[in-house]
Image (tube, rainbow, N blue to C red; front, side, top):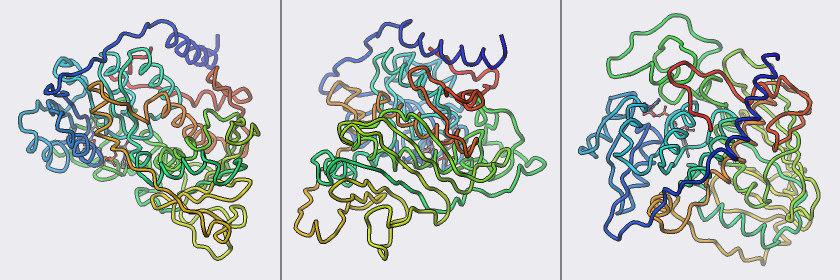
Amino acid sequence: MTARSTRRDFLKHSVIAGASAFTAASWSRVYGANEKLNLASVGCGGKGWSDLEGTTKSPHVNVVALCDIDETTNHLGRAAEKYSAAKKFFDYRKLLDEAKLFDAVLVSTPDHMHAPVSLPAMQLGKHVHCQKPLTHTVHEARQMRLAAKAFNVVTQMGNQIQSHEFYRTAVKLVHDGAIGKVKEVFSWQSGGMGWILADDRPAGEDPLPSAVHWDEWLGVAPARPFKNKIYHSFNWRAWQDFSNGQLGDFGCHILDPVFMAVKLTSPTSVFADAPKLNKEIWHKWSKVIYEFPGTEITGGKPITVTWFDGDGHKPANDLLGVPAGYSLPGSGSVIVGEKGSLLIPHVAPPKLFPEEKYADFKIEMVPARDHYVSFADACRGVGHTTSLFDYSGPLTETVLLGTIAIRIPAQTLQWNAADLKFTNSDKATALLTKPYRKGFEPKWL
Ligand SMILES: NC(=O)c1ccc[n+]([C@@H]2O[C@H](COP(=O)([O-])OP(=O)(O)OC[C@H]3O[C@@H](n4cnc5c(N)ncnc54)[C@H](O)[C@@H]3O)[C@@H](O)[C@H]2O)c1
């Protein structure tokens, strides 16, 4: 058996095992009116801080554990000061050893550590709010969806704009038929990538601040020397070992209302136009073309979704049914229908075109949900989440399939979602997963 077929078998079998080897244990229960949800947070700085602030808007949440590899103020420090009774950790594995402390966890680390933290947490029966993109690889995204189901836990991906009135309104407009059957979609993120600070891996090593636990930051990723500001914090986005570049960073936001509105699941093929990739750093621009099977929203006809990223890289207005002089927002989507087009800026009110045709059309705004409080409520047995892994898993798979196409540009890669493989490229199939550093391997289903 070749190494390649071993990996393929592993992928396939892990999916099958996920579907059958576990029966759903029910960890969910309804909490008493005064009973609090005990919450842990992994990654307390950056987005993790706003995840904590958002979730603790619920009066029913008690922060009991905080884990961050950086003990300084902007990371563990500020959270530790505010939630002074919470137990502190710098290694998520030690937090999981004390799983009895908490019922739910916020995972807000860099992307390469989402699945390694979330999967064992779900296997311990913990509810999980995990930042976007849900995972670093397609195989991890499939595993996250299967684990949420197998362990019957409440889940939410942190694409909080989904709960915003603007995105909710856009989805309803499409479902209500405002633009007729959907024919095509264009999405873009045309902002610069200020986090690309180097053209290649910088030489040497910087002194490691005593408050930073670098081995734990690296986690599952291959070891590399610490270089100040190059990776931690925020700038890890530039690097393939930790991120999926601009599409990985924004795809789960911008393609989310498209997915919901058009009721997409998995593409049948993906094609990318992108520059030759640096060995370690992500692309500076890309155009990715997904083909999806038809849905009720497309009148059953297959549909193309085209993604653009890179500084100033947007679709041409004439493809969108938008007037030539109209200035498109820096990021967003246009859903082109048989009767008109819907612009969904990221993030601003949706707009219908042609403007003359829709001059008298009154857009009724759909009220926002609270993305974080609804997670805390659902964990306590009240209501439900909307970006549960059963939804955000396939969305993330789609986004990450695009990042595989970016690595293998100018080829139409045929995708079989049920078998979790590309049918015409072993090279692309091999990129559905990656090696994991010893000591940090996730627990697969
Ligand atoms: N939903 C959104 O709008 C949004 C916005 C920004 C970032 N994000 C997502 O949030 C996540 C974090 O992004 P960021 O920009 O805040 O990154 P960051 O590097 O600024 O912050 C990450 C935090 O996690 C800590 N950390 C890193 N590795 C850890 C580990 N192994 N264990 C525990 N703590 C660890 C860091 O010290 C830091 O406090 C990413 O997945 C990113 O895509 C989402």
